[in-house]
Every structure is written in C-alpha cells, then in structure tokens.
Amino acid sequence: MGVTIEQKTRKKAQLPPFWSLVEAHGSELLTHARRLAGDDAEDVVQEALLKALRSYPRLAHGEHLRAWLYRVTTTTAFDLGVRARRATALPAPSPGPAQVFADEVAPFEELIEPLSPALKETLELRFVEDLRYEEIGRRLGCNEVAARQRVSSALRALRRRMT
Amino acid sequence: MKLTEGFLEGVAAAAVDEGLVDAYYATVATALGKLLVIETPQGVCRIGFEEEDPDALLANVALRVGPRIVRAKGATSEARDALEAYLSGAQNALDLPVDLALAPSTFGRSVLAGLAAVPRGTVTTYASLASSIGRPGAARAVGTALGRNPVPIVIPCHRVVPGGGGVGGYAGGAARKELLLRLEGYPQGPTPSRGS
Image (cartoon, rainbow over the protein chains, first blue to last red):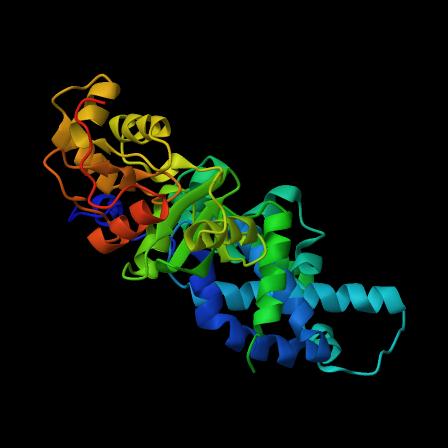
C-alpha cells in the first residue's frame, strides 16, 4: 500500500486544476478588473472565470496561464462595458473607469467582427485561446508555418481596418 | 483586494450548474479526521485522508478526469453530509454514487466491485475476495488493488482483513480501519472465518 494511485499515474506536466489558478491569481484579477470596470469588477471576474473555464481544456499547454487569465479578464471587461453602453444608449456616458478604457481601445470581439469568419477564428485561436502555432495549425487543418502566416495576414487585415 | 469565499462559491456553483466542470471538491470534518471529497457529475471519484497532499490528489484528477476542477461546497454537500453522518454513527447506510474513473485497472475495478457482497458489520479476507471474483491465488494482487481504492469508506475496502488475523493495512492507516470496523459493529479483534 506504499504506492498511492497518485504516484502510480502521474506522468508529465499538464494543466493544473483550474481552481488552483483561481486561488493563486483571483485577487489580482479582481484588482485588474477594478481598474477596467470599477464597481462592476466582481461581475467581470465571475464572467471571465466562467469564460476561461469553457476554453481551459482546449489550451495547448500549461504555460503563461496567469497572462492568459489577465487577457480573458480584459476582453470580458471590454465586452461587458460595450454591452452596458449599448443598454443605456447614451452617446457620451460619464466616464467611469470601464468606459474610459473601452473608449480608448475597441473590444477585441468588436474589433475583429468585420473580418471574415476564417480570419476571426484564426485571431481567436491565437489571442483568446492563446494557442501555440502548432496547435492553431492542427485546429485549422494546416501546418505550423501556414498557421503563422494565417495569423500574420489576419493581423495585417486588422491593421488595415484600424488605420 | 480579495475575492470572498461567498463570491468564489457563487462562481463555482454557476460553473457546476452550467456543466462547465470535470470535477468539484470540498472538505468535510468527520470522526476519521478531515476528508477531501472529489466528485464528478457521475459520483464521488476520490476521497482523501488528511495526511494525503490535496494538491497531488487534485492534480491526479486533473490528469485522469479533466482539469476543469472547482472547489464547491454546495455541489458536494450531499456526499459530505452523508459521510459525516455515517462516520458519526447517525446513519447506518452510505449510498453514494461513485465514479471509478481513477481505479487503476480492470482487475482493480473487479476487486472493488466484489466488495458489494461484503455488507456492513462483516469482513472477508484477501484470499476469499480473490476467490469470489474468480481469481483464487491472487490474494496479494487483491490487497494491492484495495490499497489503491480511490473511494475508501464508500467502497468498503476496510472490510477486507488478513486470514491470519489482525486488521491488516489500510490507505488511511490501521487505526482508521479499526475504527471503521468498530463503527460498523464488527466484533472486536476481527478473526474472519476463512472461505466464507
């Protein structure tokens, strides 16, 4: 009985239990959300954690998870900010922290909305799901080099729209 | 700025409700000490004693079942209450659904399944259990499989003792095994009849 099933089956580095990330980074994500969304910070964090949970198993590797959570929190704050502005339909809202930020930078999803579905998917795989090019290639059905090219051409298309 | 327990429980409950999780867990204080209870939507998949490293237990569940694991008191309350009541003697039955995702092998599963024929208040031996699952002579392997029981207490591996007397080994320690047998009304100093 000396060998537990844990020792028996542990093989390699992998994605840690999601809640260990929440315990390690939850408070700083709340601070981050507070800067972006003021009083809505807790809503943002809740929404962001659920969103992160949805895509967590699809992450190709267990690196940069903290940065990934920050990114998900940021895009969530933008999205909620946009929804809130649409709901109130005020042309010039009093600038709460969320709105200041959201007005400076268009939310990611709104930003990529006009692109073709293929380009949108490519950018989401790279910047929302934070996948490596190898995994992006696998998901798009092409090799790593082609995946790299697709991401950069999607970025070029995006830049053309912004300038 | 800190996230409160209430907020985190709310997030976890929403995640469970929306079917976004592979597993959820919480601890419960019992007569056998603090237990870590890990469940999947199918049932209890792991019970850990307080000496076991919870991070290692959860990492193994992440590897074998999936990494979407949250701490959820509400979702685990039924299992935790049932364990607490059984171990305090308030309840004589412990009927909880189990998920054997962590059982190491087909053989291991058949050994654990064989325990269904060993009711509360009785014991069997490693050798008889081996015979009862059609593997006479595999007593040692049966002992190993029982030692890897991922769901102790609920799957009653504590009801298997050496033919030569004594309570034998237990993942949670011999003292806990004795306590469980006493709780279940098995006479002091188990001396099982062989081949029963």
